[in-house]
Picture 1 (tube, rainbow, N blue to C red):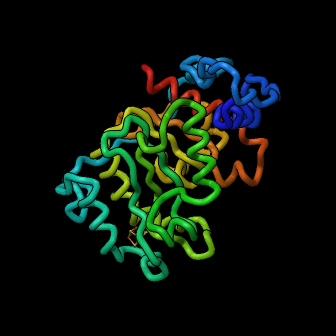
Picture 2: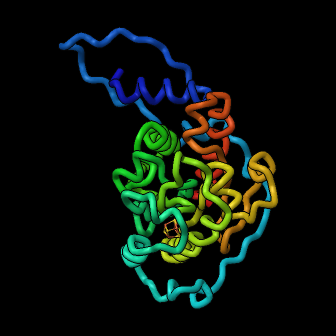
Length: 254
Ligand code: SF4
């Protein structure tokens, strides 16, 4: 069995999927080629939860009301350039690089995390390191290549000691994210972790309350799940995360 499919099936088991991993001796060098085995369209659907009912509705300001002329920016690169020069909150002082986000500018799925960590600050890229690797694996398990999504964060500069962004920092940075949503116009948003979900949905509910509903963010269906870094700390959250991403995956097919 090719290594990548062994990895896939192990990953399904880790995420609580119903796939069964069977150890198999490596085929002999001269064995006839076998048809490829791997994730098909139905693999992630097996045991997937139904799409839950509606949750909160958040309206986005019209582009001309975003402030600071952000509504006149027509490309993600233009937003990134504006972010690179931004000193609107105290996080500007400690950053090595801004991390505006990256991915397909016409992505159907947009992911939103909390903010850059040390690796992201060093590289200027979102979700690198162990949490980023896990995120890439999670996306792969629902048949979505990482390069096909757009990944952004609530704050574009690293909070010191990886602390949670302060409310005024999140508020100062949120217009960039709102404009990114307006330009990408994704079909689904996946909020990763409580901080992202609170910033997007207004902080009126706990993570547990925000999960299990399909919210509306500027008319875009929004699903809340755990942050990949939290999954590394607590594997018990892998199964609920697997359910959440399969809900998001189903919404993409609607
Ligand atoms: S976190 Fe956002 S608002 Fe604060 S300085 Fe960086 S880009 Fe500007």
